[in-house]
Length: 93
Image 1 (spheres, helix red, strand yellow):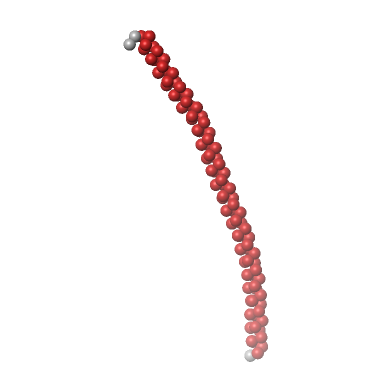
Image 2 (spheres, rainbow, N blue to C red; image 1 turned 45 degrees about the horizontal axis):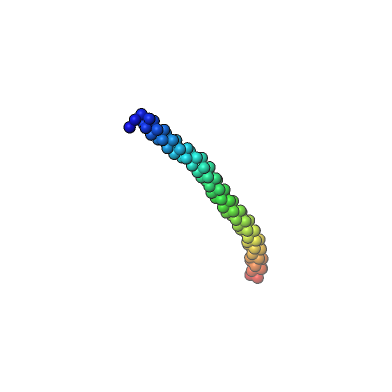
């Protein structure tokens, strides 16, 4: 090969590798933000799910608290009734 042919060959290789490098850089610049957006959406979705679970837990806890107050009132009422029955039984003896 002559020196002119080698220079043309070298120029072709430089353009080939340069264009491949440019395409690679462009691909990275497009893919990287896309992956970052996908990750952010995934995190937001997960946080939304956790928030929903937490809200349901709060509602369940409030329901349980209401039921506990009701049970406590019924227990106090039954305690009063038992005391009354005990007094009546003592009076009968």
